[in-house]
Length: 274
Image (cartoon, rainbow, N blue to C red; front, top):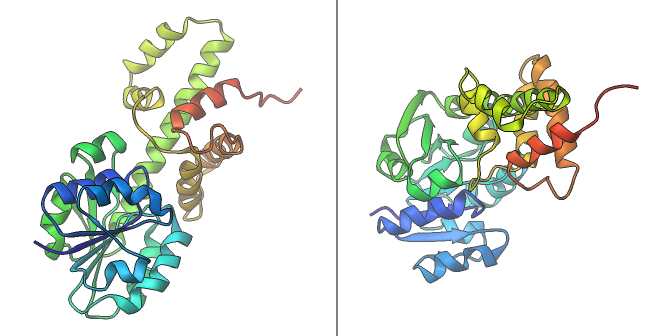
């Protein structure tokens, strides 16, 4: 069994790391807030003192972090410590430019794979995530399969690129549902009737996500992802979506909650100019 270092034990990272433990992989974990690692340590993982300690004898290193700056900071610590022959699997949502930047930093003896995921915390806990793997993923195919079905997307960076496309569609769809429900509110329609009609149409999947429970993807992360997308090309509709999520993330009671909370925020937000 490959020795694995898992860095980043947030809402997604913790259940993903648990999948590896359940499969019998020797697992070392690190998280900026060490207390979050305690349940995994109790289940058999080793807690590393810092990122460099985590990766020093790992065959596979997995990073599942909040965004580009967090990934860059961890890269500063681990790149000099990655052993020859190791595979680094970057699973955060950071966009293809950051992945290519990391690829230029790792030694030729290390294989970098970008493999962001589709799905939320419920699928992470049950091993049913969709994995978008860019680059040479042959050496980590069995590890990635522990998390769910794997789609090979092409060269390094293509997984990160496709993840931006997918997230943009989902986040935008949820915002559109929120606006449609805001219109229904303004027209005095029954909420369940309006929701049911939308659910039966082409936005059905977005309706389900807009009112989902038991899952987690924070509005602050939605802001990060949409901002990454709008830096790539002109996306006027997504600029408007970004404004919605920025307003939601500015509310401390909503910022770190699932985007379903942002739906209520968008519906209640007064954006009409007097």
